[in-house]
Length: 194
Image (cartoon, rainbow, N blue to C red; front, top):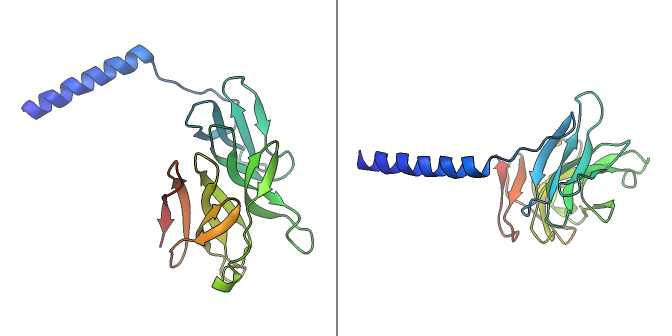
């Protein structure tokens, strides 16, 4: 009973502290899906998607209310953002496919443009790069995690890590997997695999 009373008292103190500060809610334009906030609270990123047309990644400066769309005619997504406003996600790249078709690839958005994360170098391990996506980024922007997709024969997702823009590792998995989170220093990643 004593533990329950202490827990209840702690709950009341916490509730009063929240009531004094108030909860923060972001109100965004219709069809925005905010996926992440920067640790310093200056930036939000996400997706503009109405379920009928292509998704467009977005970067929202919460101090100025300026919204930058990360694409206008092709698919893009924004899943995480650093304190400096560097976004990771995916976008449509027309330079990879021999016929000039769009391939959805992992990238970081900074300085007003997408920068593709390099997927080369792992063909020896049976991973043909037919698409990829970045889900999380370290605080300094050097380490990014997400997935790469195997070729058309089995189309499996493989959890991946990029360091300084280059594919560094295909993380352990048997059938499929994706990394969704990373520590601030980039030393640990989390997601799912089976």
